[in-house]
Length: 416
Ligand SMILES: *Cc1c(COP(=O)(O)O)cnc(C)c1O
Image 1 (cartoon, rainbow, N blue to C red):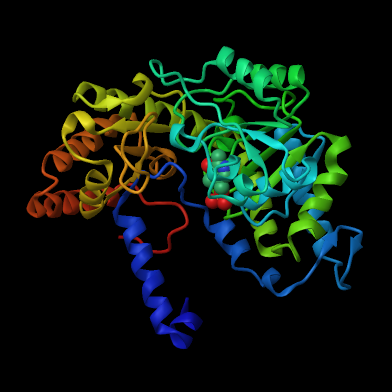
Image 2 (cartoon, protein in one colour; image 1 turned 90 degrees about the vertical axis):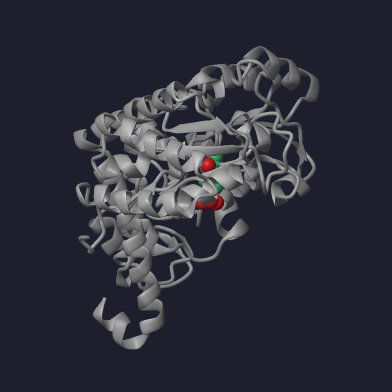
């Protein structure tokens, strides 16, 4: 980054500090990852210079000789990888992708039925403070109070009563598998569209460790930067007959020119995701999460739903006598990065909830395996017990940095 250093040492310094932090910390936020150098190169390419409103062969700007084949190639890769009839690779991120789906398929004031935010759903599934909850009505479903899992009979009953126009399956903090076939059946029964939002689990779907929402869903949205290990962006996959409506909703409905550098980097990530190495990566993410959940259970932690089927673990801190926020802050000072999170039926407020959320996608990208999970769990436990002790946090941070040296992260230029 020589040019950046010469032009803007201030920004350069902050990026370099962040790179060091990403190298020397254990990043356990389940929506984060490390992209490859190839993905970074495409993201940082000259494609950022080009405007191309419209779609391949139907643009509002000239000079698309390279952009048209690029976008077509990436859309074809997306269709092939997920087995979809149509793909739109232009959404700027996951939330705008979901907004585009509602804009395409619903009239204002119609009803969205998604997993409630405090039970693990996403803001963009109709939650009140989101535009999706202002422009449309919302009838959220929750998880079962005892099992903390989705009760499909309860979802069916609610759908029959509420008659939503779209049912959304997807989550940011649900550690169990989604039964997409069941959601598809319920949606068909009540005449609703079925949207599967696989932002968190797209990489697991590709790897075959989570059932695919296709062909059960009418539309599938996904971010590209979580388990899929691509740049920040999103895609919409759908039935062929809905393609035109979805495309029109993305552009000109909601967006202007696509971010071609991001499109290219999504293409690179899709190519990487089509390899046997990526399937092994997806399997390892889940094995690591299971092992880490087991280690935390063994240390007396209240793992929500008793474990995990995917890449993430939700832990209720109530029985440890501290809040999720306090636990997350202490862990951050010790070089272990997690986020505070609501747990289902949380009596506390979202900004200071009862739980923490951990995930294994990023550490698995570094080659960290099941054998290392007891050590990671022991550090987490030690720091949480010493949440008021900066000396313990400092010592663990040094140990974590030393440990990280043995597992160089993909994409980072820095070798610590
Ligand atoms: C992350 C996420 C999104 C939103 O993605 P952004 O790119 O942050 O807008 C949408 N839905 C689900 C389920 C997510 O986990």
